[in-house]
Image (tube, helix red, strand yellow):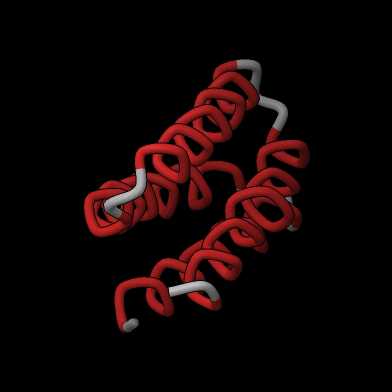
Length: 91
């Protein structure tokens, strides 16, 4: 699944920017990541999986609004990436 791999790479790169304190670049990368996640969500076809990811994304957006970029990076790395890996394995 090419889209999942691309999304995982974007997650890794975006989180790394936030961990390094490069918040502006992280925010720019996050914009692209959101596009990829939107496409990926459209391919899941499972309402429960879609809802799980959307709930995690809400938490991620709240962290972004609060400028808690380390927490945002953690959500990307451990919550969102973990779910995507799980979905790909089970597909």
